[in-house]
Amino acid sequence: MSSVDVIDVLIVGGGPAGACAGALLSRAPTSKPLRVAILEPKRPSVPADGDPMDSRVVAISRASERILGAAGAWAGVRAPLIKGTGSRLCAYERMCVWHESVSAGSADALRFDAADAGEPNLGYIVESRLLQAALLDALVEGGGAVDPAQLIRLQIEEKGVRVETSRGEIQARLVIGADGARSAVRNAVGLTAESADYRETAIVANVATERPHESTAWQRFMHDGTLAFLPLADGSSSIVWSADNDRAAALLAQSTEAFADELNRASDLALGATRLLTDRNSFPLQRLTAHRYVAYRCALIGDAAHVVHPLAGQGVNLGLLDAAALAQVVTDALAAREDPGALRALRSYERWRKSEVAFIGSAIDAFDRFLSHGDGLVSQLARRGMSWVNRSQEAKRFFIGRALGVTGELPRAAQAAGGR
Image 1 (tube, rainbow, N blue to C red):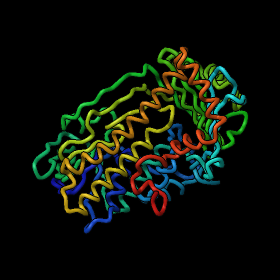
Image 2: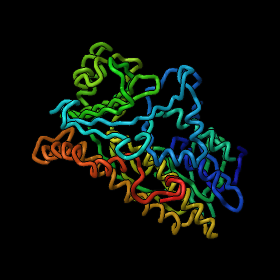
Image 3: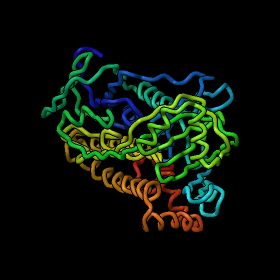
Image 4: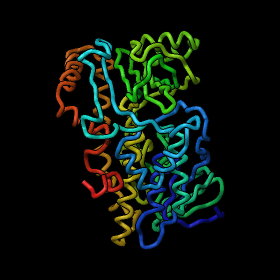
């Protein structure tokens, strides 16, 4: 980009949420194409055919699948191959969730099956780098730009936002902060956030298992954390082990063989013995909620606005819904000949998404508190509730709908053809 560029929308942060917002806005049905750019100094490339599966993966819901289609990125997510045999994308058709007080094969384990809801699957597991790369490619294909620059400072003015980057100055009508939990955009415009430390650490790695994963996502709640096995396209599984900090530190310090032994015990051998295929990575867990999602000519999406516990795999899905909702609000404002950076338009996005995220975040926290760490009466009732849900098709359909992301007030991009 030149030293001074004047554009419509500048997005700071090219992760899945920011890249999705950019791809959707670059394709927005406006009277003239929007000038959209993303600041992203570390643009990933699409994995080459035959590359091993990365250990950083995310779960993509049905709503997110539709959003990716509207953004022009779904074909790019599906195209790369694993070992030259098939898509790197893995659909999961079932879920098995159980508490350590019972076995995975017992009647008290909670099971969801896509067939019960008349769906082909419950979602997909995809590598984070592939998702991000496909979305950034879709942005460029739609006419947007990726600027490998870093944000230095920004100043909101009456008619726009003046942004200084490591590669020059940009002026934009609207700035979108998609730059993560430590958002520089959020801080620059004076938006505040409340955070809470879960005092847990997530450990991620890919493992081979003695028994096939059967296109099933497996999750066990324990007194000191949660362990999930997510099915991958090459037959292996990605583990996400959220453990109390002391426990996680001990696990990370162990040898590969000792860690596998601990993993076998923690999984109750639901998939048989395990073998590590990748290094172990880890990150601390926190919850974050921005008090406000918007300011004049600025909006926050994804982790810049909210961070939730990973046990339900909803973080990226919430961010993609943010992106679709904000893109819709901006497009509708332009169609009504309104300023897309005005607070009147942006506050409608904030009201829409903040209430939905608060509901989901509170539900996830309740699962973590009462199923992973609780031992009182409420925790006992929660465990019994899993058994009750397992016997109720109506309750199962409700939870499947939530997992698919097809309930609530959906952006147009997340709706099925013809709307809902």
